[in-house]
Image (tube, rainbow, N blue to C red; front, side):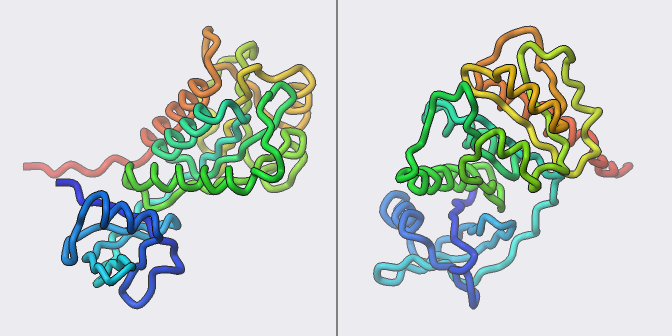
Length: 252
C-alpha cells in the first residue's frame, strides 16, 4: 500500500519532529482518520523528504522520529512561462506541469490575454496557486514544489535579466520551423513560452525574436493553450529522461 504523504514547511521541521500546517493536519486527522503511531512521509517542498510516525497532540498533528529519505536526483531546470487563461484551465496547467517536473512557473500577461487579476487579488490567487502545486507534488511523489513567480508582463519578461541567459523557446502555431527538442537539451535552464487562448500578436513575436527567443511550432494542428503547454513539457522532459545514463543490467 502506498504510504500517505504530507507537506510541512521547512521551518516547521526541527529536532526530529515536523508540525503539519492546519490544512494538512485536518486531512490526516479528520479526513483520513489516521492515529498516533501510523507511518507517513513528509516533504518540505525544497527537496527534502522524511519518514516518520504520527503523533496526535491536542490540536496539533506532529510527525515524530523523522528519518531522512534519499534525495531525489536533480534535473536540468525546465521553466514554464505561460499566459494567464481562464482560472480552471490555468490551475489545471499548474497541476499537470508539477506532475511532469517543471521547476518554475511564470504567469504572463500578454496583449491578447483577456484575464486580468486585480492588484488586490494577486496575493490570494498566488497563495491558491502554491497550494495547488504543493498538493500536486504530494500526489506525484516529488520532494520539491515548483516556484511560482508573481504575474509578469511579457515585455518585462523579455527585458528582465533573470531569464535572459536561459534558452527561451516560444511556441506559435504559424511558426516557420517545427520544434526539434534534442537540439536544445544541453542548456541548463530552458524556458518554454506559451501564449494565451488568443495567441501571440505580431508585435510580441517581433519583440521575442529580437530578445533572442527561438520560435517554433508543435505541429500542424491548432492546440488549445493548456494542451500546447502540457505537450511541450512532456516532450522535453521525455527527451531529457532518454539522455540520462541507463542503469547497468546485472548478468546472470
